[in-house]
Length: 404
Image 1 (cartoon, one colour):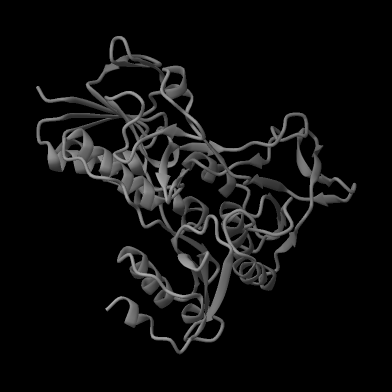
Image 2: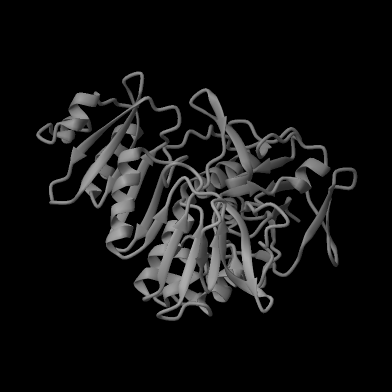
């Protein structure tokens, strides 16, 4: 019998890990433990093409059902892991225990919730993380209804775009002084805001909510701090996520804003690794978590290599994307710590890219309907090259020169 390898979590990281480990080790026993009813599926389309009906549930699946049998991957659905028993090397689940030699924790994250007592638990108030959430929200989407969205981050704005496209009235309420405050520059935020307003979405910035209003036992609107009442038929709360560290922390594994891992994904316990949203690793001399498809896949593959005793260091070039209306925002790199941005006009009218720098060193690029800028920015980062702010801002400067 091969090494008993278990993954807690059944999302993007779990599938990437299982695929890579099977490639490296034909004998390993691989078990995925997931608490949802569905086989592992993609999450990004939930706030985009799935809610519009453009993508069906079966197309969300990361692997078809027969892949698991072919690759000898045991996927336990509707199974909640409740405890990691380090003494017996078992995962204690709701209805069984699963022994392990090596363990990957890929428990992901969950949506932040609003403070208790303001009505966030009313029927008609939703968060968007799981397939079941998207299915519930889809039942609310009818032309002429009104949606209010709490939070001007990517999830909230993607949902706003879907609702507006479907003919709903939409209002976004953001507590910070602008949308995308934590993740993007003022230039990128202004571009995205203009796109939403052109599609009829109202965006209220620097606006706090006091409580949710109910009528007949159901959400009916939001009362703002200044007592303004915003009536709506339903609400989506998108105010960020929290890493699901509880299983690891309860087992005594070191955690701090996620599960602490080294550059091979190993936790403070030698036989336990972590990957994806939940993992906190060192990047550019600081610790961070990355909530992205790229990170889930690449970090999980690094974990598989470590478990198969082919250790490599995880050195990502992060990438992200967001689709809103006809806007494709593509991001290469990580802009944290930036102290300067420059805007580069795209080759077509209305397109541009925003380039981020820290002390003159290139960190990241936001490409707004400008795939060429994204491609070159990503390549510059991958090759370990640099670009000066003046070069990035100069549309006549040939980016090819930096990657050839």
